[in-house]
Length: 155
Image (cartoon, rainbow, N blue to C red; front, top):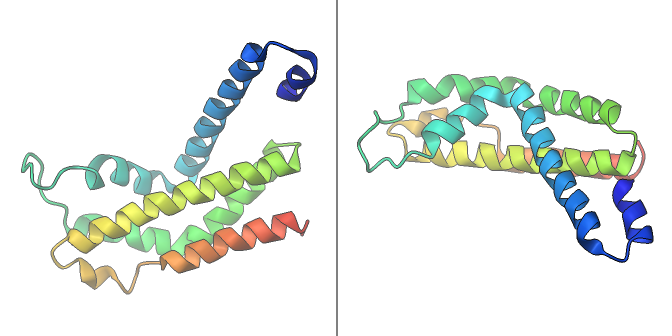
């Protein structure tokens, strides 16, 4: 709302740009906090272990035993967690369109984290044993589209 007022009232766009930057930064913080609330173990693993350079040899290699609990936890509750995130966003934002835009950003970021986990598993010796427990990327994309369409249609 503040940005809209500055767009109409200000000839100098510096103040408007300042508030747009604040909005962008706070939105990113909200998205990350929302994801951490529901997927903290996955995110911590992806940020800390999956992004390590495996050729450096400074850290022990990632094992199936290390990622299996993450995969099984995600598979058992990702849809329910997305529903909870949806409810959080609905109650946190009075502007419905802004809230749904933030939810889509959060779901897209979740997809990126999960894709990184999946890519990491492909590089682990014996990682293919986890394929039966991995949620498919297509299922997650479908769920993101479902929320986008449902919310757009007002259901």
